[in-house]
Image (tube, rainbow, N blue to C red; front, side, top):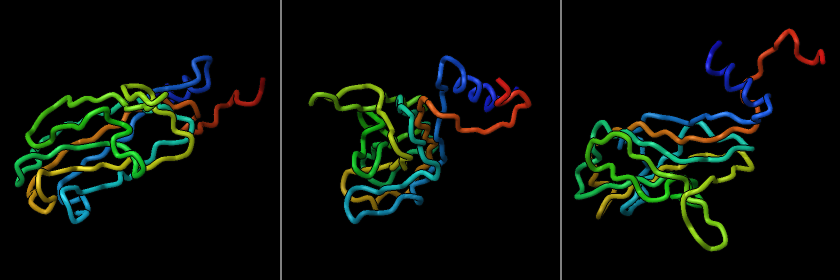
Length: 163
């Protein structure tokens, strides 16, 4: 049984949800320079409606260098750090850069599940110390982990709709 089928069975069972992720390799040249210290990039895959974002993981294989520092926020266009409680330091190569999602409730911020009520594009915001155009290198693997409450894979089982 494939992992997709295991997740589908969890979603259809009494548990009602499964773990999933949106993941993508990104390079410094993929980011759009906003004309200031930041570059932005929208990931190709979206987080589906009916999900709860848990947090993020970044693996930097080549540091984002050329400027004196570089950090990464992971979120949406309306809340750039919604999926990462603090910024990831992506200036040097590193593994297991983990951050909890940043849910705001009752005026207090902190780690927590972020509900996603409609399909949402994940936006990365990389920020150098002076100008994004000075960043000349960098490659990373970005993962956003979420709980899915809706089936994301349709499989035609022979016993479906028989009970």
